[in-house]
Image: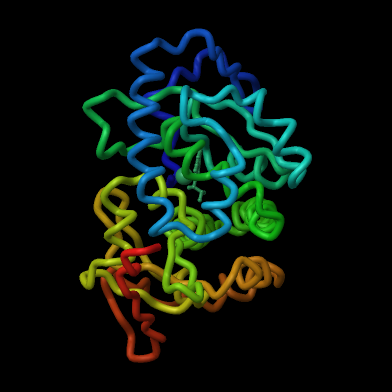
Amino acid sequence: MTGETTHNLRGDYSGMRPDYTVDQAWSAYTPEEHALWRRLYARQAALVPRYACREFIDSLAALDFGDAIPRFDAVNPKLARATNWRIVAVPGLLPDRAFFEHLAHRRFPVTVWLRTPAEFDYIVEPDVFHDFFGHVPLLFDPVFADYLQAYGKGGLKADALGAIEMLSRLYWYTVEFGLIATPAGVRAYGAGILSSGGELPYCIESDAPNRIGFDLLRIMRTRYKIDTFQETYFVIRDFRELFEATAPDFTPYYAELSHREPILPGAVLATDPVVRSEPPSANT
Ligand code: HBI
Ligand code: FE
């Protein structure tokens, strides 16, 4: 999810450590919260085979956290063995710098609180379902895991250059709302999509949004809205394309982009490589 300041946010930031982490306090979750988790999980798990990328489907199948809110400490040994990442429990959205600092050290911040039943279909801030269901499975993919760490390191540099806004667009249009081209057609890898009951079919099947081939500078110029389905999705060929895009130093990019107009979320430029997406065939 996108970052805001840590003012008037949902979470309880009172007991946090200097690095913004807290204890998960798993025993404090109520039976009602575990029941809501099961409903959220069942809804998304039914959509994943048709609309999610192969890497997400396989990682979700290897994990087993549908029955109750997962214990981060129980998943961490498996995650460490897979990609040397670790989940850290946080009260909610973190200031950008604190967030980047964790990613740069292969620590993924996962919010500890769960939404209310009234927020079954939509939530503004990331809760434990968005963060864990949406983000954690792809932390098990080695290439994506390396991209996320490179993103965190890039974020710390961008912070120093005052280029956070451009870099948060990259996070938004890849980690949160990214699509990937597969032999079976376009599929979702973004956490904001994978944790959403409505947007997961929409991003693949609707002819309303634009789907444009991945272009780093195009993405860093493109604004986004946080409270509607996306008007534009960017499509990568594979995770290596993401990782390689973050290899160079972004400083010259920021210089070039600093005097160019932002692009509106719904715009399609004549130079945009438009990507077609077909509804998955019935038997997928
Ligand atoms: N904090 N906990 C948390 N989770 C996020 O996804 C997050 C954040 N802070 C900032 C942020 N995302 C984005 O603005 C980054 O792209 C900067
Ligand atoms: Fe997120």
